[in-house]
Image 1 (spheres, rainbow, N blue to C red):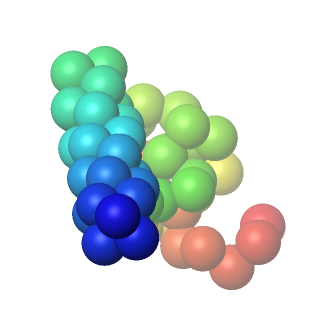
Image 2: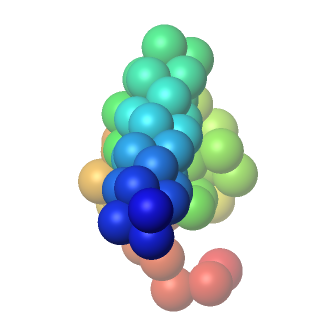
Length: 63
């Protein structure tokens, strides 16, 4: 019974993570783990950002 509970919890966590990735990709995010993707303008190379994995241009230095 304990194994079933642990397996159910793991399945729920993996399912929620997969749903989060699906939703993020559907909304157009290129780099899901990048916290700065939503804070920069959509233009690459804008003045407020420098160079991010998602193309928003952030250099992740806290500017």
